[in-house]
Length: 117
Image 1 (cartoon, rainbow, N blue to C red):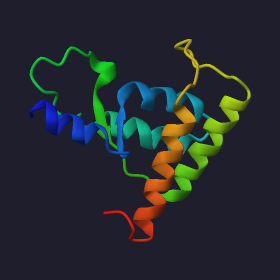
Image 2: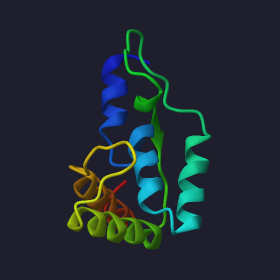
Image 3: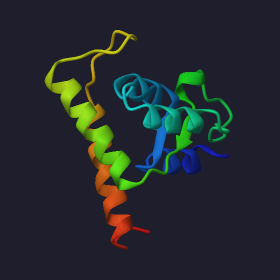
């Protein structure tokens, strides 16, 4: 896969890095079916990286397909974590998490309404 194609694919709202999915699994840990669903995605083959890509496994990208109810639950969990200034075991803050999940929520909602191909 060439770099332009890779970037275009990775910029889509349904594409998620291994790191973001792992962090989200930690945030929704009490929602076991969501954690299991996200863990199943991580067992799939990631998007092929272009030659010269320097990122390690944490930069692997996966296509995510969830129903709106699950996305809504994740968005609520992420918002709550951000409001409480939570961090994950990786020690990083949640900057960008709420925005990324809200973008995905809008994307899934538009697809359900037939507005987004």
